[in-house]
Length: 583
Image 1: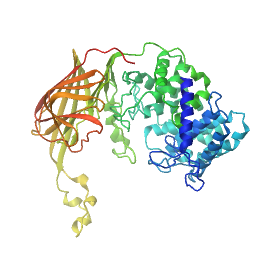
Image 2 (image 1 turned 120 degrees about the vertical axis):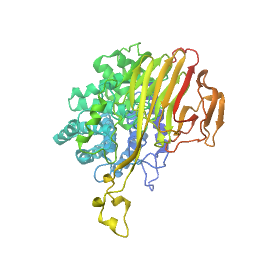
Image 3 (image 1 turned 90 degrees about the vertical axis):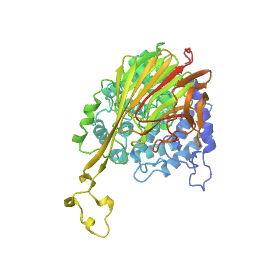
Image 4 (image 1 turned 45 degrees about the vertical axis):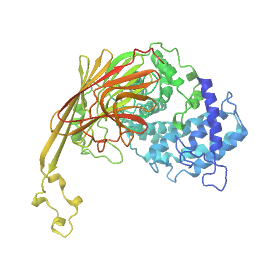
């Protein structure tokens, strides 16, 4: 795996060199151009610091074809000058996509930049000194923003703590430790089953893991590793047989997108060596197999492996990673009790530039049998997803015109052969504002709506819509049984979202102008790579091709079932014959 990383890093060096702006008259002189925007950024993903990590790792590594290459060193110097020029006066950076003058995005760069600085500092090569001077100055300039800056999201706190840890290691300032202690005093946002607030298995769970590993080491706080261990154990059950991460219920931008285990390589490798855990070592091996390149600036695996050569051998792996299981995550988490305490927090459910993440700790069931992997979930648009070999049923979603959009399931309970999901929505109307509560503007020629005290209106004619879904295992697949009663004549739409790489056949299908399919009846088959999923239970109870506020995904094969309340709808899902394990 190490040799593979070295080779892929050398290729990344070549790609970055080809994108570096070498025209001294250009505003981007010395930076590496992001091909998707045509701009050279200073950020930890598509930015110049990531290419600098590739280049620096190559220059410092005798196994690289670029080891102590003077031309590459000159390019690295130009890049370090570009980064300095594009650092704001307050010490922060603006990543480009959003978050201008961003403390957390600066922290991501600090974490990667500091590790590269440490690696280059270890080299006994005098020509590196101008680069080191520039990097040291950049890091020193970040101290004020790291001491005063805030965050948007839960994981940002742990990124900032890791950055503060590296700054403490480099500059020895006690104020840095005190600032980290303020963030850590907020406590760990993780359930006993190991789920972080953002439920982002594809991106931010791995971020929280590695950043707390750094913070634990740099601040001598070994207790910070306990939540990391919880999450890494949970992730044993959140990977499909192909290595694809379960992202169907994420609270962040990885929702429903394809991600692999590569971001978890360092957390698993570090904890495998530290704990002597063969399961972690096995997961590290699996994650290592997915590493296509060393990774972005903040989590560059090769830089870390060169700083800690012992990580190149993580220990003896277990051959018993779980391949047959059924687990319900957060089954015993007292989520309702925590939600009931929100009123006492004083924020009244409002938060600026972020979100409350009230779906934290919502139950999720994971079932795997060999190469078949199913997810049953709550508090997201999809309530069921399935992988069967190469055949991917990415989402099953229920939408309605009651409160236009998807109907999230909010509760999950076990049944003898499956799970019961329930969801409830309310919608009402509001009476006139009492005369005694009206503002002065109501008695003038202009009375803006936004100046009226809407909180004083009396609720009238509130309606409640309750749905339930039984997700049951059968001898050769699954059965989905959905029910909804009043109000009557609500138009419903059940969407089945399949991977765009497969083929739909059979069934009575009517193609819509958007390229989706209304499924009127008959047996529908979706096949891919010799594997197939068959569905029975199509219906065309109305002709609407979409539900307002329920956006259907692009580049997928979407099949729609239309019906109206009251309904008792059953869908039978059958699978092709049992598959051998394909990992």
